[in-house]
Image (cartoon, rainbow, N blue to C red):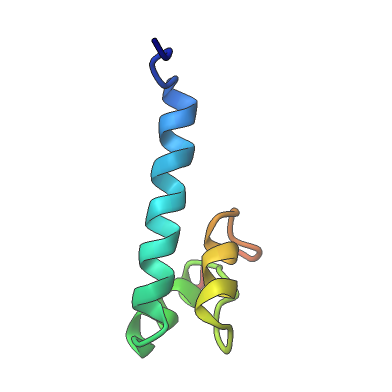
Length: 65
């Protein structure tokens, strides 16, 4: 029998899934790239795999107004 996931583990798993989805979507979406850049994520010019890794961490700069 396995132990249930803790809230922290569930959040980490969900964040990883969302990062993967957003990276796949952003790779083909200039508006999403612009939105992520505006939120402080340095994703412009990156590959899908690089975007996924960036999105697994906090933004590297403050959001633009």
